[in-house]
Structures are given as C-alpha cells and as structure tokens.
Length: 423
Image (cartoon, rainbow, N blue to C red; front, top):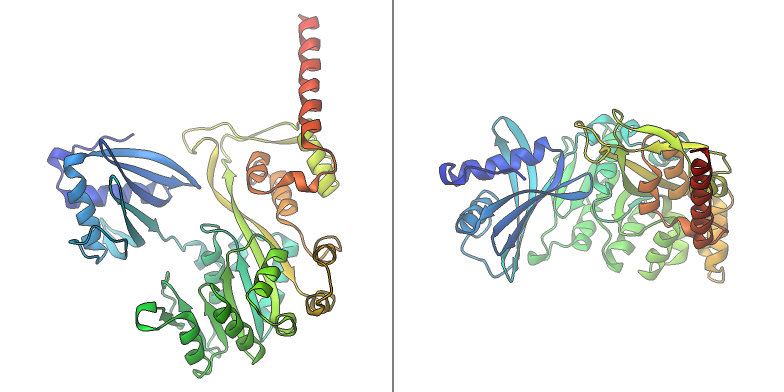
C-alpha cells in the first residue's frame, strides 16, 4: 500500500497522481471504494484487483468531486448513478478514460476504466491468433458482405479485436460507419455515431439511418436486443459487411442466442460469416518462469484434448518485474468460419443441439478455447492454472476429475515414501 502526504498535496494533484500510478502499473481499472475509514483505492492489473492506498474520510468527498468535475458530471448529484469520460493530458501522458459513479450505503463508488488501444494500432497480426485461426480471420475480412461477431464476457478484449479488424478494413475505397455506446476510440477516416437513448437515438434507430448512408462496412458496438440483431442480419444480407459484439461464451451459444432473439433461421444461415470467441489469460513472466514436471492431471488433459504427451509444463514464481509470476495478458480464441454444412444445419429446424455441436466441434471446424489455451501453455505464453481457471476442462475429459485428483494424491504419497526410504 502506498501512503500519500495528503495533508500537503492539493486534491487536484492527488487525483492526478493516483491516475498516473495506475497507468504506470498497467492497470485497466481504478476502483475508489467507500469504506468506514475513507476511500480505498484499488487497481485492476492483469484481471486482478490490488490495493493501492486508503484516502482518509475527511478527503473522500473532495476527491470524488474532483473526479466528477473532470469527467463532466453533475457534482451536486450524489443520489443517482452517473457516467462520464476523461480525455486529456496529465503530466505529459495522453489519457482516455471512462468513469462510472454509483451511490452505495457507504458513499459514492467510482470506477475509472483506462482505455488502452495500443494493441489496436499494431494490426491483426498482434492479436495472439494461432496460425490456423489467423487464416480464418483473414478470410472473414475478405468477404464483401456478411456478419462477423466477436463474443466474450466484459473485459475479454472484444473492443480491441473489433477496432483492430476495423482498422484493417479502413481503406480509401471503403465507407465505414459505426454505432457505439460509448465511442471508445476515435479512428481517422471512420464515421462514428454515438447512441443516445434519452432522445431516441438507439442502436436500432441509428442503424436504420445508416443504411441510407451508402456504407460498405458497419460496426455495431453491441447486439443487445432482438430489433438490433434483426436489423444487423438484414443489413449484412443487403450487401454490407457488419461487425459486432455479443455477450456469449462460444460459437454454439452465439448461434443459439441469435435464434432466441428471433432472427429467422434462413436469414442467419445466409448472413453469418464467422464467430470469434475469446477470453484473456494472464501471460507468464519471461524473466522468472521455469519448466517443471507435469502432474498426472495435466498429462491426462493434454492427452485427452490435444492427443499430445507433455512431460513438462511452465511454472510461475514471481520476481521484481512481474506480479505473482504474471506480466500482461494473452487472448485465448475460438474461431468459427461457417461452411455450407453448418449453414444448412442452422437452417434445419429439426436439427438437435447435440448434432450441431458435433458438426461444429468434432469435425475439425473449430479449435476450441481449451485447445487454443493448452497450445499456448505448451508454447510458454501462459500457465496451465490460468487455462484451468478460464475454461471448464472437466467437460472435455472422459475420466472423472475426482479420480484424477485421487490418483495424483496417491502418486505424491508414493513419491514421498521413496524419498523417505532413500534417507
């Protein structure tokens, strides 16, 4: 925990120092949590929250007011949630942040999302796609019309992926229009529209107008309801390439969600070009990681999922250049490029979910999130523990997980007996 000389630091400088400390720590979010003692400041680094400092109670209101002021919020309103943004330069650092204020029983909680789109400027080659998935992505972007969906939970890098794809499509001969809530990054040469539901400027209303603006490519920030989904699909059929995001876990659940949103099967089967599902795993530190012997459980998983014998895997230790053995994050992806067989299956109302799953996952069409994650473990990018945390490994195993743990425990006891007999 850091201690600031708060009595001798102006509130303006204190607010700046906290933000700059978060940026230098590579944090994605800053949490200002009201507690009995004051305001606890926490940074989210590589997906995990870390305590930074505690601001005494007497300075809490001034600090929150300062953040609301620079975020263009109403500083007199403390009973309702508010959203704002901070754009500008602090101590020579250009910053772009989203701010949310929420009233709680202890006071106002503030969360600042630090937008870092440095990954978006490097091209699609920098998005951690495996070679097989990268080829599929390139094919998707070459299709003149259709809909490409990027799926995943909040904070899984969907915006970074869609913006990078948009930049790859941003050429002189292409008219690109986006509908976003909020606009997270300004892109030169792209027409970006901000949604404002209070005045009737919804995703659906904006999309209807956009179709009269002669677009080649349309980015919809997020498909949230049936109306938006239906307009997006129809736009892709009428000769436009549509990019969007949706909160689902994998390819199969994305198709099911769109059907639940009352998108007609014949339209979806024609319009859908591809689905990119992704999660973020912590990247192991290259300075302190080391190989160790794989456990029985790990060997079983590698053999079952990849059909590979992996005697050694990477172990994280921790050093002064990382946080608990991890430094940064890497995307784990599942990419489905639709073929004629899958299109026919989607259009078949009598097809069972199990049959569609068999077609998508067991005929070599898709490298699953688990398979991609384990390949990245073998390559030394992340650890087995990270993939185990992200993906439900047990579903891919024939052997009961309790049996695996018991066998592993027996193996450890046997090894201990051998060591004792030697001594």
